[in-house]
Length: 219
Image (cartoon, rainbow, N blue to C red):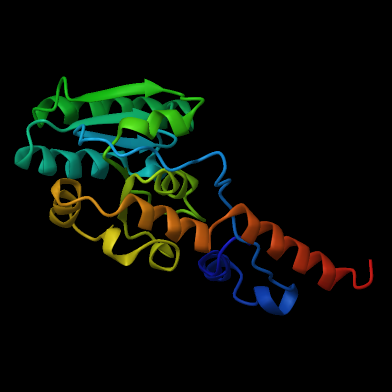
């Protein structure tokens, strides 16, 4: 598995998991050479969301957090990179609900759907923050990759989030999210250093190499 909290989630449906099989942690890793630190830039007011448009990503909460922040800063805009996924019913009901919420909260013209984006590194180049409201994540590549570029994360406290990302960038309520979205930006270099020290591709390769050496000693 890629993180300890994934093991705990699996054990909810299979309590004797660790008696049946050996569980090893091989964490996901970010290619730091691909996601370079962007140059210093003025605030743009642009907030990013990156991920599939489906229920597990909790898009209604994303919009509610953005709406709360937008009351404080009328210049903010939300930019979503991703396409609708899941079954036909899930896609339709989510699209209808999001359109309804955007218009009833007065966000029309301030929320832009970009569809599937091939180059996420370029997409977050001009964004002040990236917001994630997922119900669950095994890791959260979208968050870590943006952090590697120096983009401030605003992360709903999904199970395991506090073990993966800076606690000061994790929120529990809409009010906390709005404060993070409109508050002072963290040091971009510190964000990148955090990812490099914990979630680099080198860490992943080393963990995988250690597992293979353990499974095949002398191989």
